[in-house]
Image 1: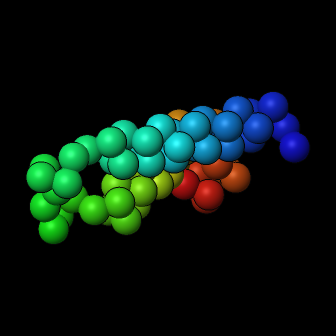
Image 2: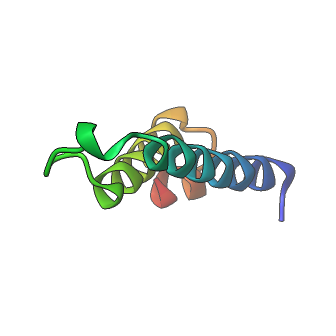
Length: 65
């Protein structure tokens, strides 16, 4: 694996765990049907893929994004 791919995977995993930690600390009184754990993790995945696709460093990263 290249260094760029390793860094990208590390950032993605870090963002996933950070998003999970943030969402689980929200009290139950603040949760709405639109704010679920699944939606938050999906949003993190979408943001990560947009960053990969927008960077345009390599064709592989753009396809993966």
